[in-house]
Length: 354
Image (cartoon, rainbow, N blue to C red; front, side, top):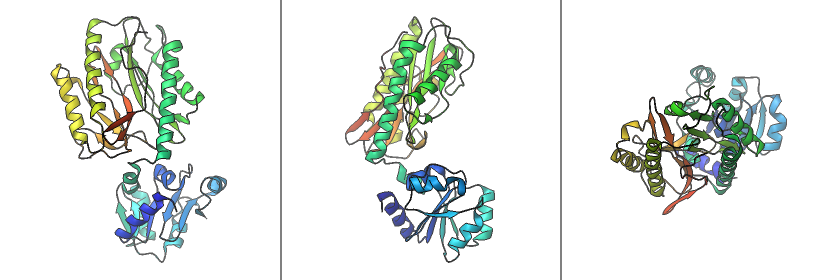
């Protein structure tokens, strides 16, 4: 029995649960290594591990998680679940994941048995094991390769944002990623003022700033990196603001360590930007965790009460966004360690003029 299952069983024992029903895809993968099946569910009990899915995924279950007991369903699988749980009294469910209609169906089939719970598996996922860290390091390494190739061969005046974004997705997959980890951001000039803008037909021209925010999934685990570069030349105001954002970003990275309060890191980064008169243009939190999802808890933000633990993985990504001018964001992914952190995105952060 692996450590993840042991931790879940301890949680169930402490909360007097006869079973725990897992519906979220990333949590299913975390506990069982099963990677597919939109209607799949796991049911964990002290003595049995069930995976509920339909016949399309039988062979996949046999390959990926042969130790789990396979239960064939006809979606949505309520009848089959009822048969397995008929003698159980308290069944934990992912209340933050399951839809109202699905919960209502379960409630009708399993009256007075359901115990809605929030982020149980997600909390286990916050601290990564060494296998997970290796996947994330590899995803980050591929991201660095992609950025290097972009700078050498792909970024040039006349290329559109959409063309660049498409190249990034192609390169991520060509170099070994499963897919992009989130919609790739490639924004030039004034469009870079949109923190999560969508790449369009805007073509790069000399004097532009270009923000690239991208990452890939490698064996299910995400990477995330942002760099902002100058095209052909870097105007004085861009150079000044770039150095301010870089200073704030480096400060944030220097503060990441086990035991650090996420809110304190965010405050320090925000104050650095304020000292240069740019605080009002920083419109989001300083960072977030990642893993099987691109955005996980804890967040490095003013609203977070979390304290970092060793082997959490977080981003540090301050930015400034000025309407009509543009934006600058610099982001690294780091692994939290005792006394500091391991930066795993190694692309140059000094101002690049391409």
